[in-house]
Image 1 (spheres, rainbow, N blue to C red):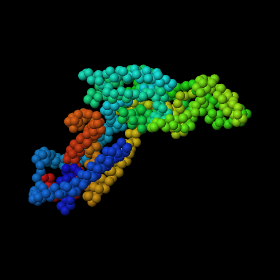
Image 2 (tube, helix red, strand yellow):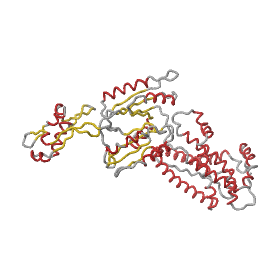
Image 3 (cartoon, helix red, strand yellow):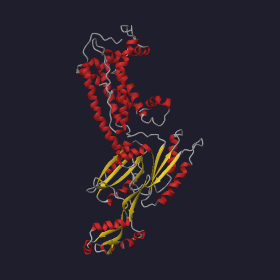
Image 4 (cartoon, one colour):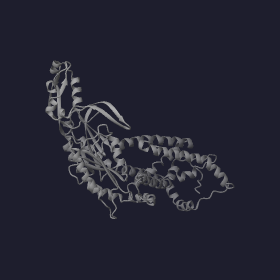
Length: 535
């Protein structure tokens, strides 16, 4: 509630309430812990205000209840500067109203030009790097690349001679039953840096080393940011364009177009999901020959699967260890195309036939991986953002993709951090509207009339003027750094910093606008009175 309203709201016979409804806007699970902490803090403060505060007031303020109120020294100084200029504002209500409209118009125009980000750059000391080679690269080759790549970061030092890499680890590929199964051409590296090292310089030196390996798709992300990207889309890019269609070859036609955007301002680590044609043995059963030998397609598939891939039949436990018992054909049965063609298939009369007697066995070219989603094949084109805000880059990418004519049954879908931010923003606006409606209803219950209720409600956007103004000038940023300068700009303050910018300037501008623009508006819409005691 504004300082001016606190003056004329002291109505005899009615208590003075300080209603400050707070909207806890929980629009992602990321805010769950903060919401719980905020609710507990408000409940505890309310309990103290209703129990401890009255008791302490009774004990410490005995004999002072009827004494004349006396303003603190700072308040008296502020009043001496404010009261002489107040009549100038009151005498010009229409000019003040025009100034308010102009301030809102400038704020709206400035808000449309602000950069948009989903998450701040968390200054974590744990990083994840990915090296992705061409599909089909062996474990031995990736191990050689990973070993060479680990030596240079571990040798980095700062000006004081301190090692910039505290820990280094990696793993190559993932098993089929892992949480993220990948091929041997995929390497994930973990890097931990000292907490007392210069963060920006450390990241720059490590990135300069990582990006010197040609022919590889690589990135350098903090652990938390990489995990959040994986949860949002299953991809590690900030901007993801997912293409759907029935034919993988047609989807791959966009790879050349995407490569031309690599040099676009703000676009980094542009990557199309690596897929190549690899040699595969294709077994095409012949129904006529199957009937000739009294075989079924299922029987042939099961027999060939056991001989070539193996089948689990039991488990053996040795203490805490568990071992699978697998029935598998001898290694010479799968040594080549000729050996596969000669696979023995049991027939019901006790004889055996060769696989090539009932099927066409040949080597064909096929994609190394086919990904599907929503019953359709898909292909991801991803990129990260550097040097520009996420919103402007994502909008440019969307406009670029929408200009591409897609054939029937093919369509793009835009995913990533920008879409997550848009969804969160829509939820935020909807719940903010509900919170604003609740505030207005509570004000109406307090005032008992719509005219003062709407007048007070019009002061709520005053803070928005300062919040938008805060992120557009350097002076506000400097003021917001004051509380951070005491403890230093350490990791963990990435969310506090922008919050301090908006809140600090929102408080300043809302106070100034309430003191200057609200009194004239009150005299325009309020009922005439004989005198107003501003003392």
